[in-house]
Amino acid sequence: MSNFIQVTRSSMPNFDEYIEEIKDLWDSQWLTNMGNKHNKLEAELVKYLGTSNISLFTNGHLALECAIAALNLTGEVITTPFTFVSTTHAILRNGLEPVFCDINPYDYTIDIDKLESLITYKTSAIIPVHVYGNVCNVAEIERIAKKYNLKVIYDAAHAFGVSINDVGIGNFGDASMFSFHATKVFNTIEGGAVTFKDENFKNKLNSIKNFGITGPESIEDIGINAKMNEFQAAMGICNLKSIDKNISKRKDIVERYIENLTNIKGVKLIKEQKNVKSNYSYFPVVFDGYKISRDKVYQLLKQNNIIARKYFYPLTNTLDCYKGRFNIEDTPIAKYIADRVLCLPLYSDLSIEHVDRICNVIKAR
Ligand SMILES: *Cc1c(COP(=O)(O)O)cnc(C)c1O
Image (cartoon, rainbow, N blue to C red; front, top):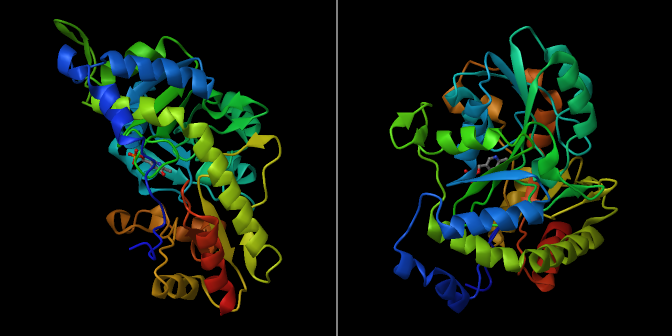
């Protein structure tokens, strides 16, 4: 149905290009366990992301779980609830206690003015989220982490290709996790990565993602299986060729949205961040005092065959699986935004005509 607009659509290479890329797998018959495609993609991504080290994973979530495990964190970890469930699950599944810090009302990243008061003797790390590709206040987070001797792992799942003053976003903190899920700006079907500064960290991560195997007869970590396979890596190699073109198409789409939706009472857009090169991964709109509520806008779009997404609603500190453990009143700004935010459709081949149609449906009411 060409009339139907999904919230997102996966970027895919040309069919023949992918077939060409996977052809030699029938010669090598090497399908996974750090094969040629895997290693080639690692090398290309280190360059593209401008980081010193990278380790690839079968998905972003396991990349985050393994990064947490590899840093030997204990006790409490400070994070935000305005994120995909993965961030909070990864902390709890490592036997750690998430402590929720509120977000700021400007770019919805962790509120650094509220962070320090949440640190206790049990705190071992901060896991902030570059939500929607918006960059956290990395300088202030680094200052606080140094002062209290805390580790920092960024959930950079949304931030592929983002940079600050030409420094790749994967260079901050002890580690950053990227997601290469089908719905993300760059995909390897499913996939993910951890970038990091400390070269020695690579052996640890590679061990943990492969059952803790460090040699033919030695298992040194209680690891897991989280390796990226060759078909995923081949998809990444192909998709990486068009990433700049795709991000630039996303930019045009976002600019059209902004043109259409600026200066409307009760429609709040996120301001561009200074010195940040964006990847235009999402287009969140906050309906705050608009003539109809966020939920009504969502319904209205749906009636017009347009699928938007209440991303992120509900907050992770209110999920059924964590019932009774956390208090949503601890993060009032996150609650306020989660009740009003809507992500509009955005993918690289979304047409400008469709953007106009979406905006007209919102404005016509
Ligand atoms: C997508 C996403 C993840 C998990 O990544 P997967 O590759 O889907 O496992 C983690 N955190 C955030 C914020 C995400 O959007």
